[in-house]
Image: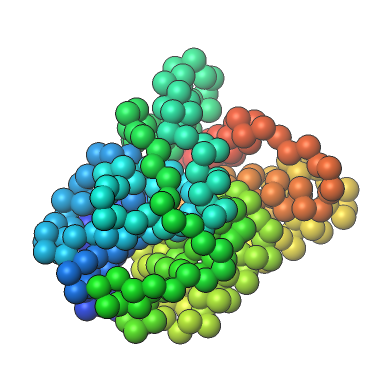
Length: 323
């Protein structure tokens, strides 16, 4: 299916829509809407209330007669759940994996609001990196709104007569990643198991689970694949994400065995990535997180750097890549 990568609501199957947000970089996530008989299901909200409100307004042509009765959060990152409060209410069920529900409390909107508020006291390139990645969003006054129902494994239910399968594939990108699969329509919403034309970020791992999740998406033989970030994908796009993960995993393991540090590995591996098809993907600085997560799996007891140190390293790498 040819759908332009433009901001807004796009029908990808009968009554099934993708809400896209270019350019798909930090915080610019996608969502989905499934209109059924007298009801609708929303797949993910957005990073703040303003953006989520704009999205819900764009969906009113569908939801005015088929109100949202189910909201699925594919995982716990704020750009997929911080807008939940605008959908929550009587008659609305919010569904996520049990692991995602636990993880939602770990990075509340208040912490991101405080980080952005302190940016003027940060040195460059950290200040510039935070402004670019988090500055466009408004984290103040968000009330974190958790799921009302959780599950593990596979959850099957109907919304207005449409069959839905939620398939837990985490821990991978995060602790509780979920695919939202519509078997009759052959549409899958993948959350952040797929970053298309952008660098994946391995917050949780293990990387093997993420590769297996990609294989699972391919096995669905979906007609439409809606990623968490970026334009609509096909099976080749899924394979590209899997190939990137394999490349980084193998490259990290080899350098670990050779006695390099994780920081040295990032720089050395980035130089090698530059000559691959992945070299043109957005946000390549996420390699810092990916290497550290893989490294922690190779060394029991490894003291992973703090999140602020990791962001500082990403900022330095991102700064070095600009002309």
